[in-house]
Image (cartoon, rainbow, N blue to C red; front, side, top):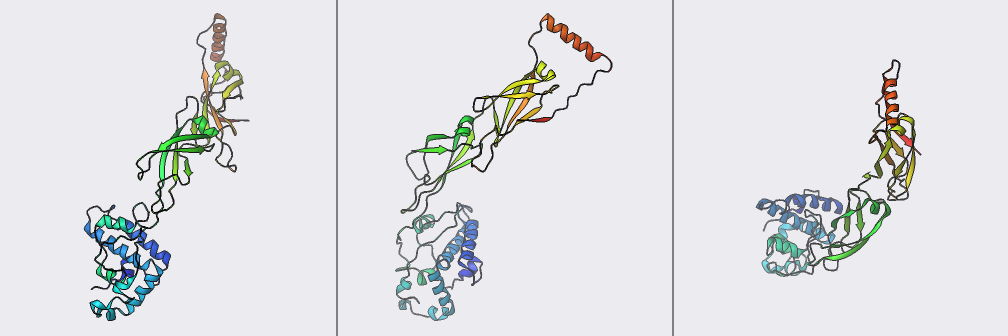
Length: 340
């Protein structure tokens, strides 16, 4: 029988802490997991060795026994088959249960799951002799460990008004471990934006063997709005400004997501494309510590659809004035302005 140096398998020192053992196992188990290396028998063998090493070193009691065994290995190696293991009784009479926490998804795996993955008994003779209970060749089933259910992510689409005010939504989800879909009612807080992630505790996949349920995460998608565009907490809207108001100055109405209209002051000679900021008129913050976003109004200058004879006379007079020497040149510079 070959002695197994579990410290070497996990690539750690013999003085490694419990946290260092766990960290090393997770890193290596993820690297060699069969799901990551399909069909790679060398990786599968390495994965089994890692799991076995973690089973022994990951538990303070079995690690202590293993360290004792290492100092007296030759003595136990020469014992007769019927003499039993170094810790009493056939194969040590030590209860074992796989403590795996290194799959690609980071979740724990029970002994039953590992047996199903590889079939039969995958532990080495060394482990079976000194750390497994009863007959090392038996295909027993230990009591399953409690396992927390997986978290579930679900995409939810909201109208912009719903995201602004908050809404209670009822929808159906079906975690992978459940045969039927189930209805979930969730309160979406005011101020969620595109890509926001809302956590609903205990509404994910059910746990195994009495373990806690996972959480449900709702990923927010905002439907396209006919008037507003939302970028983070800020809203963007087009402000329609008549030509005469853009030239002479005045006021125009700007819509808000709440439905009210704001009066926006337009300075004389306002250019198309100029942007005005209405502070604090955007989306609310998700927490009280976050200030409300802003509303940005982009000017769109509208031209008259038709001209009366009187209007034509005035526009022709303006055209003549523009052509006269000394008339200021046209300034097409765009700028951003702030409005209260």
